[in-house]
Length: 433
Picture 1 (cartoon, helix red, strand yellow):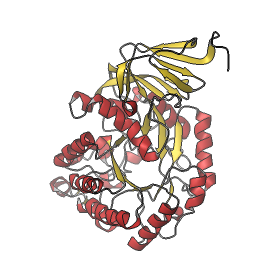
Picture 2 (tube, one colour):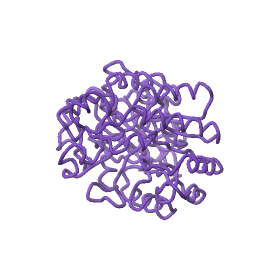
Picture 3 (cartoon, helix red, strand yellow):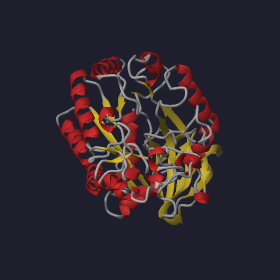
């Protein structure tokens, strides 16, 4: 290590900003000192610390790098939609330093080689860290269990069958028991596939009026009830991905109160959009699970505030333009969300639906704890993954202001408040305005 009186090229001082680190209960105007890719001080700089670079964060918030629980980067297999290179740039521009990739790539993430491929391509891009979920069943086919021991040894942070159905409840029980053997968190998408069938919208008055096949609330709540029973039976640690109904959230809250090891998250579009937004057949509002009622939206917001939903994610799904053309049911579901995760979150703060520190917790320490990663904190000796954003900067979402390859968003044209000025990954500036 170089002498303390010589400025090292990797030493950075972030000064003048309001530091918010919910994991450590910090909310104050403090300096952050970085050396050797790690945080060495928050507050007073160590004796002899001479930075090679200073970042003026006056008027900005300094917080841990954001952790996104669900982002499909489309690689490998769907590079015509997006790539790890393009989406990691979008992540960095959004202050996101860690992305979690579901296993439904092509090929499916079910071998150490699949995990290593994604890791190496993320490392080559150098803009964000990408971790992966492994397949719960072989090829996500739903009947034969995957090699979970090999997946864990290769570094996967959990296992999931993504949106694919399991053959039956017995297979699910065996899969949960096997995952428990290796202390793996199982990420569950609560959906009864027999009930959701070929639906594309929430089953209700709007879908009926539009002639669209509906997905009932029960498709989610029946699945949650089944999953909770199996979680209690097997003792597995489980996470519910992207809940959309107030009733399902209530069931999870009760399970948490009873001591079951369960967590849950929500994707940010569901905190703004409802079934009403599909009234003009806007395919950018075609998502699975579907947008629910205004009552569900409010209950999701309440659950996020209470902490029943301990993480907020983008559920990023970039598409090429053709994927959103055609009749509503035949378009591909999903919203491109990396560019809007933080500003839409800050809008919740402006609407007094969530406190600023609570929002940052749901975007940093909350998801990091679910993934069991040493991220989402500005603790001493933690990796220097940092997001600096100006909460007052107003801008408009338009194709030219987006970094993702996917421009499929129903928020296009919205005036947003709050923009990332700097993102640091392992002490290196990977984005700056």
